[in-house]
Image 1: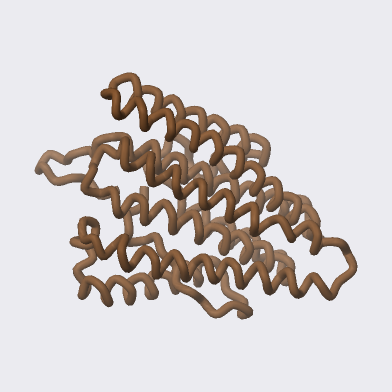
Image 2 (image 1 turned 30 degrees about the vertical axis):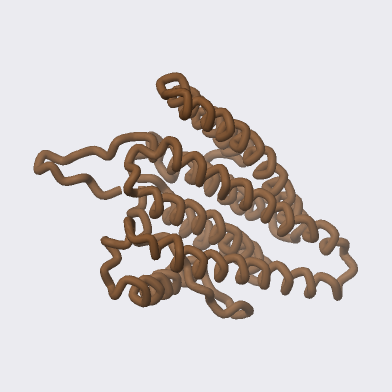
Amino acid sequence: MKKIIMTTLMGISVIGFSLTNKEIIEQGGVRQKQTFDKYFNGTVEKSKRDPNLLNKVYPEIVLGLYNRNKQTFDNELSKLGKMKDGRKSILKPLFPSFNEYINENSMFTKNFLLNFLEEKDDFQSYIYTATSISLENFYLNMNTLLEAEKNESSVEENVNTVMDYLYHSGDEKTKEDYMNMTDSELDRLVSNEFMKLNAEIDKKILSGNSKVRKHGNGVKSSLRKTEKLYNKYQENFDAYINSSRLKPESKEKIKKMIKFEKLSDLKFLIQSLKKPEVEENGQQQQQ
């Protein structure tokens, strides 16, 4: 799993210029450092427990990511408005469905971590990481598709970059295993991971006190709603990808990437329920 905080945020790149996903992520590293330096004077490792993380850094970064997503969507919608191929009506529900999904997902993640995170001191960094990655994925997805429509040979590199970026070290499957799966196989894996997370919540509820049981049922309800809204968003994105003139194999790769992103998100949350491994010298291993 990636180090929490240190490798998660992307800056607001200039929209309209061709960038690879690798360049976008690298620019994000620079933007992230600038933001953390502004609030923490370069002491990033101490930021996990500093209230400024959620009070100042989080709103600034999240708003920036949201605005970039919206601008990208609005630009594409405006471009399609000049065409007569019907794609505008297919694109139109995409961003609203993403917003519905991301809002519920953020509420679920916050309540899930508040109630069940094993390392309580890491709550701020976990919620910060989970939310920012979910927002940045939308931009990476749009960039992958839009760049492919200009140059289809870019698909391979851009998809590989995202899967490298989100792959969890220690996963029982390799990145190549996921890449060799079909879209429907990855879709089933995502559904299975939702069920695994639900089962983990059940375990926490059964072993917890009355307060945990009370809040746990609310978390389970939010998870069901999150899954429903995610499926709606994913179906809308799949429909827009299918409406493109890309080759079937290119469409398949992009759709698989989107499902892999959610799979990674769910694995991240399940991992948060476990106590960090400790090396022989007593130091916590880096995630």
